[in-house]
Picture 1 (cartoon, rainbow, N blue to C red):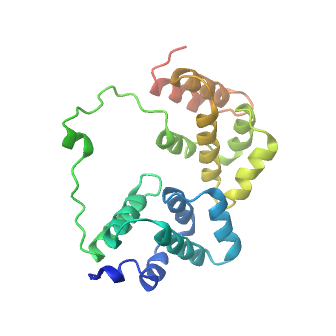
Picture 2: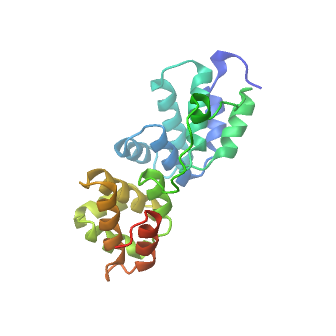
Picture 3: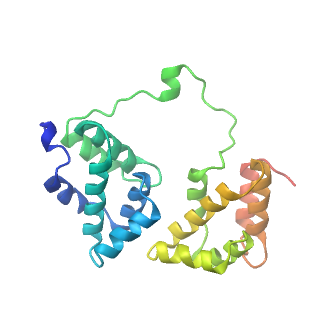
Length: 218
């Protein structure tokens, strides 16, 4: 077990740890660690053909720029790994075990005495868009993007940024649309549902599911 602060997340440890992360997960992890698309593209360009080296250099750069002591960085990395979008909770557990960290933090709402949300209605947020993007087929991506008023060149940029992962292309397209579209949640849901149900996209099933999720009947 690594116990000395000076040894926490050192180069040798990160080199071995990197080999347990799949290339597609590396992109998701990089986003959760706060890297911009341009940063991730730079790592890809600098270490072409060696995806593990790309992830390794990304983690080194993250460690250098992140404030806090060694164990706080371990916690931050663990939280990013266990994020629902990254889905690597098992690596978080191994990381915490390596450094003797107990993952026993109380739930924030419980600690504050807040009541859980019982509305049953999901939030129209990045997590919802992640789930939705996984249901959209690759062939639906381009026509959906056009219906959402993206230009062809913009859609090509998503393809270039996430060449090996169509689901990531769709996810980032949806999140960018969500962040830039004006209006309240109801108007955004109806707009997205209309686009999904458009004949050129052909996903009336997802359109109806979306409206049902947000209790919209018209």
